[in-house]
Length: 141
Image (cartoon, rainbow, N blue to C red; front, side, top):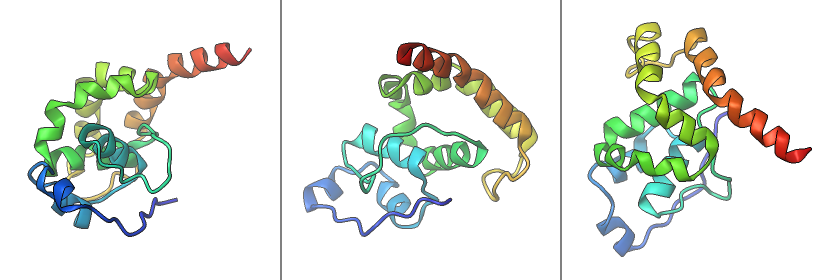
């Protein structure tokens, strides 16, 4: 299911403080809940349209986050702050370089087209999130 965002209303002050490329991404970028989580958390401008913060759950989500960083590169410099959002983001950031290498090898054209068959990338995402899910389940007991 693709995430659709309702009409976004920004004040002049918000527009003025947007990082370079951000307005273009908001208007034309490939957006999903994970990339909007990154954008909202790092800019302080809520574009979540009522959704809760989320981490990339599959290669398509991961791709949209990476596309956000290509369009708004200054957000990548603050990416490490996402570790405060959840344990999943903490583990994702700790494994970011390896995850990107796996995705680049599996989907060399990811910047231009979706990665529909990225089983290694998906498996690695599940591997890095597994301890966080186990911990969450432990807390529920």
